[in-house]
Length: 581
Image (cartoon, rainbow, N blue to C red):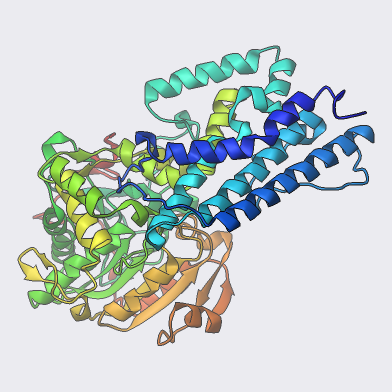
């Protein structure tokens, strides 16, 4: 069999040129509006690569393409077995897009698969050669290259996906019909389906821990959960979840509910359920969230429990809001909180991962001018931003499965929550992006004035339990570790396995994963980890033991929620969490 008589030669000849074309198209793509990240960012100024290095890269690329071509021809001659010129391009670890046997069963699709991987590697190396002004610009270029390559994968297109073809033939076209129907339904919903939405309902099988709303204002409802033990800690636990998504990530189903676990440990738990803002709430800013959120919640919990101090916990941006509120209380001379727990929280914003790459003066000025005085950052924009960070898992996986293969994604509570997006008020968003992500001002004592007080996190002096997660792509754990340098009290830092959500929602009863502990936080992050002890199981148990030290003693569990001033308004989880963006 010769190259000229090979029936697949035309396909392979076209693929030989695809890497060069892909690179040209990508750098052309950078100048289009589609290249803008949802958070914005100034255009990337790219210089001319070193000619010698560029030439060497192109030679290496063509050599690998030739070796791949010859290996595929040899495989064809030997009836599908590896011949005398073994050569294969492998996907990166964890990349499941081409794991199905159909990609290797046909020489055409096997070549399409490997050639794409080779072309993608060429473009990534070309990006490394491209001269840009600074490291941030280079990281933005890497991010955009990944978005472009993920979108261009042959698994995303019917003509180049053998799994699509096999299913279409086997189902006599029914999979195509189902895929079209899935697409139509998702267009009507305005988002990609990641799970079977009909399988879940907030209040029915999600957010079912018993309790009642005992207070509400225009920004939040405060839930008090019913006790599950006869005796409880005298000091209640007040939880402040993030306002950028729904609180029930901490109260999914009974077996993986952190809220239920905290109640089972003998805590009276209060939780802030943030409102999903509509246009009429579009004027609220950072100070409003502090005053009407944690500052109010802490005051109400203290009154209901009849205590001077409570324990407080914040998750993600909820932890940033809570810490800021505690800074305000410290400046006012108030000492309402006995202990602080922060889960995957940034107080130092020096390295914010890929989210921060597209937050610069231009993007902040744009937000200031558009929604900074009023309006909304929509849930769709927020969802698009976070999905883009893991596009293969949260976008293209479902494009291929839902629309090409005609499949329906299985029921998964975490992904249902992930799709239940929320809006943010424009002034809050603009202040947050500029003062924290761009200027990193919270770490500087007295630089930021909040609620009429100069905030110094060094004056937040209660003991703190700080959890970060090792694979967190939203709150890099090394940056979260910097909180040990900012807070004024004794800190205990713990590192959980997995990512931003799975590392937090890790039920103790399942005894999965592990965490690292080291009471000595004098070294830097990597030094801390090198000396840390790995412990099997969930960090939940470690945290529960730590929190008991700050219980303030025990008392009989309260039979009814609220008190004469704060009466039960409605059963948990309340109205606010059910509002859609």
